[in-house]
Length: 165
Image (tube, rainbow, N blue to C red):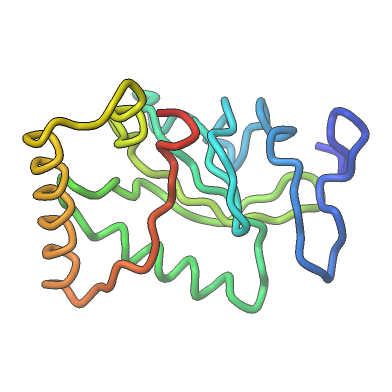
């Protein structure tokens, strides 16, 4: 793929400064020979999330794509590789991670199991009932307990559900 987006905008606003990316312009692109970026679900300062498919059975997945920062890329990939060993019903499973390129731009990616539902989708039509809220809280508490028992600290929540829920 060329260094220009479909609409003539450069992909990266500026190199050597904080980068902004025309993430939606990557829809339809295939990365790492495995992931077709079907729909941009949303973005945050560190990257964007795309709906994709994974593996021979084309399992639905969410791909987190970040612009590679060479000084920290190895640390990020090592963290994702350690994360792949976590398995709990309250966590999105990490299916794959690595490096990829699109034209002259280099990225890190992590493919996660696509959630069946999101809290954002659940509250779209009104607040949760007391029982539903207790179920959500119990699920979050169990996932946090699982992480803490393994020496992990949960530092952020990626709001994937906000964009497609």
